[in-house]
Length: 446
Image (cartoon, rainbow, N blue to C red; front, side, top):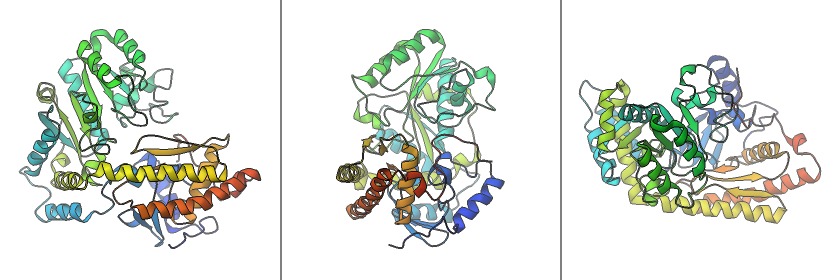
């Protein structure tokens, strides 16, 4: 594999473009978790020329194997899947937009309801954040209430960031510390209240406080930890008793543990479930599915947008969902995840490194158990990049990650962990960095 250029001695084309972008685009780009500073400040290639399978080429023609975020978990079939691309190209050739509606959206709505028999109606959008805003709008319209109890990360919209309008950082532990609620109307203060996963007592306290004002309970059925002691079933019971809408955010976890929403594994049905990311393998698409009596409340509000009606979204989703079922995607990514986690633990033991492996199958991660953990994480990313891998301490598996890819990664990992061991022994971790330490929280870039 072609070794990446030494960006410390000569900045690559992508990094030069990134520096330009930060002057033209607030924050440099559109997604916080794709900022170069989150990986390797001043050194990360930042932009790609093409991607295929689990390989990515930067603007200088360097090829990397993506063993990290994998497009933030949005491409379970791998980059540029030929079957999905074919469906999208056909949709474009036949007209992606018209005065009339695309019939594919009816077919997709029917498929989603077949997969989730508890759901009867569907609304579409093109991104997870806006789909969550739609779901919350519907829940508030249905209940005629305002307060939302939430757990986990649910996007950028006002309804969510309003939790940071108070004196405490409500999103700390749910997304990133330090996010400010600038631009969010202060009248929303107190309308959204956080509780931690598997901490039922915190939700019970919110319900007691909110009383008849609680509109919805919004949460991921699981993310970095699994439910214990019947947690999801108890959440369902609390929602029923409070007359609140239960919304499961499946934007990230959906399709990765089973075919459909992860909630299907636990036999707990929400009133609304929201999907995006993996359902269309990298093309913009999102779906809000739910029970008829709740979803009909959308008619009492105004939820409408031109580009929610384009043809490429439903076409990509239909092709993706059909292929995911055929390939048994959850089984494939579970296998890759198990190999990766074993590789981390094996290499750490060999080199006497203290790490902690955690997360769930779709969100595998390890952390360095040292005081300078963020510097170590940055050094790890730097060393892996120079050996041809886009890698951090996270791994989002896909069907494109074959056992061969994982073996190649773990072989490289052995050398990188050996270098990190030496850096620790010689107290030279920071001296070995060729740029600044990666950001660990939200930071203003412009």
